[in-house]
Length: 150
Image (cartoon, rainbow, N blue to C red; front, side, top):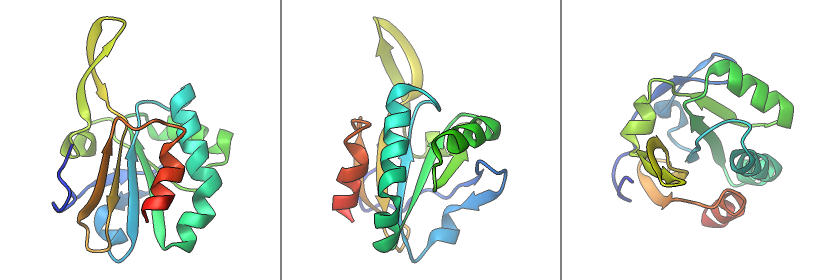
């Protein structure tokens, strides 16, 4: 996980509509950047829907919510449509941002060790610096916790 106080790594990734997004375009706003393992899985769906429900309150506080996983643009498109997600989902199949933000790590599942995305959320301040970092977050608790943090 990246250290609080460090400059957030730049990225350029497509969203669920295929439009490119960079971190630089969000300078001047608080960014909730959350990394999650996979679209349409129970935990990830809970987390995304939680952010979706609270999204108007994040906007009210001047923050933007961005979810990142290695799923494809098409997968994100279907996921966002199915749950009516009002925020940006970025596709990172090459793991560029996922590795830059140090969330691609060893995971143990039923005794088997694999590499995967560890559910992590960063709060990036208006200057593009990591203000808070939360690793191994609980999916359902993450959205209200982040709302309290901003």
